[in-house]
Length: 465
Image (spheres, helix red, strand yellow):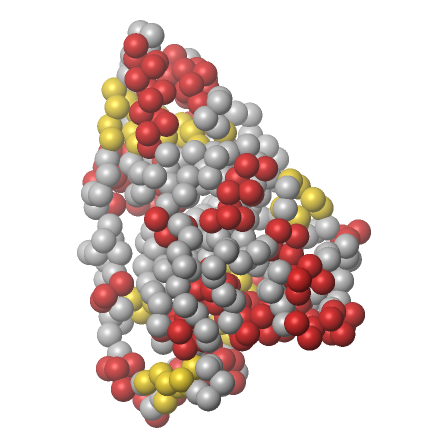
């Protein structure tokens, strides 16, 4: 059955544009909404269905007596919402600031998919612990740095930008989605504060926009195009490349930063090797590199970010980067084999707009019956508010509500969350009503990465790289 779908409201890595087209290819009526102030600097030439809604300026927020946020909306707002069946929101956005309209959408019977993308929900302290457990050093970016700010109630939090690094701010984004979305799509390296089971689809890109070519050069062109040089650990890549060059290893380096996506796309078509990021998981650029015929090196280790399954990326850490990069540079036969396998993976459709659009809609059905890809445990086990940062009571109550509705791991010590101020003080008597997940159906794939029986999206077998 055809659905009416709205996708928005901030662009991230061309996801809004691509997934809108994916829904359309599936036969749905899909519109994209990216408000002009948040158009992405690398994709500012894209065309969207909508870029402004006059009635949003007529909608006001106010502080209620309990510190929660009240909404004075208009008939035009409600009429607009009624046009759609499903709303897909990216990077902690919705129609109104800080997702405060999600309860309204739910009251109106709408389906909501929340697609988290990174630092809008990633907590630096927990991320550092997660990264270390998976063999990486956490490359803290500006948006992940802790910041003390007074947040006494929801109205204070909503006044912050969605990327403000305050703990309460990221907890707000996480809990709003967990309480009011019908499915959450994220990834283990980002969903640090999560309690509710969620889904993971990986990046969204259109392989038809990329030219596949394996140059087979004896002296390869190596491309590194970081969107954030700190998070991607550009300094480590450059240090290792200099060491290899000093040892007589020959290559040509293309370093791009702060350029439009179209420029990166052109360079990918000519490159032999792509250096993605030294991190847990891989981003959109890695998929674009595979589609272009590049051998991709990055910290993609499957256990840290398990879906899509069996990505043919050469996994590297700071300790292994030099020798694995040396082999990729010198061994043309190996490089050609990996590039061919990468394209095989991309040809299978993983990451394509249609594939991810179908996956998102399937996630709505799966979530409704208690199925999910990932079952988070890190926040329950290690979560704590940074020193000097308060957790407003509404967030403690929201955490309890999520636990009571969606459950927890059987051996989870929920009382610990009360002792560290992350659940209401009076919640002890309610912890017994928290359902527990069926451990026999779950698989622990790595530190704080536990998957469900249907977490299968990706290649069924590992490719030979």
